[in-house]
Image (cartoon, rainbow, N blue to C red; front, top):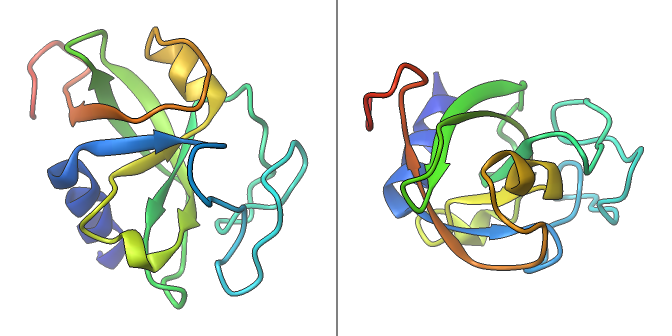
Length: 129
C-alpha cells in the first residue's frame, strides 16, 4: 500500500513537528485550510485537536485513509496515533509527522509547537516492531 510507504518514510526521518509549528493545513494540500477544530482532513475525518492524530508528508494525489500507527517520543510510552492528514509534499524525507496537541498529550509531552524525534514502537513493549 502506497500510504504505508510514506508512513515508513516518516518514521525513517524521525524528526517531527507539531500543528502550529510548520505550515501544516488540514485537507488535501491543493486546497489547504487552517487546521482548526471541525476542519475536514485529507482522509475525510473531522479534525479535533484533542484527539491523538497526525499528518504525514505525502503527494497531493495520494488518497488518504485513516491509519493507526504506534509511536513513542524520547523513549517514552508507546501510544496509538491516527494518521489522517497530509502536510506539504516538499517535506517528504525531511519531516516525519505533524502531531496534534492531543497526540503530544498522549505521548506525555507539553502540547506546544515544537520539533521532536519519534520512533515506531510496539504496543506490547518491543521497540521498532
